[in-house]
Length: 217
Image (cartoon, rainbow, N blue to C red):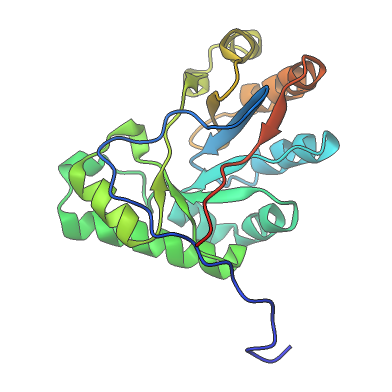
């Protein structure tokens, strides 16, 4: 269709400048959220998406711009399948060691790639290593993003074993929990296998796996 004939975009409230990231999600019932950082990686992300699709579950992917730029087809698939894509900077630097100008560049470049491949700019941001500072909070808000951290860290990047990852997710399961895993940045085959095990078990336990929501104007 010609420009102007498509469905109008949802208008969002401008996010506040926070002094700390959001750690848990609000809502009623046994609701949890799965998040995956550092991708997308064509070796592991498709398998994760396949498992999520098998169980009709949505997740949130905090992507690095340099990975997303080379794997735009995976961002398009995430959009098609209803997943949320967040901003995890361009090159995964430690933000607390960067100038404000560099932080803005890391965020803006990633948001631009996400918007082109996913169809809309990211509305959520996660600092690499969980290292937040005032500039990150301010710039994230200026770019229309809320800062989201996590409640349960699987530490899957240490390759502790599939069983250990499963145990960490299941032991930490509780209403409002945000689970951190990774779909890139190294060998993530344990993460892929662990998801296949704990996802059906969480669903059988009555948990609803969802994605973050932003308030409309």
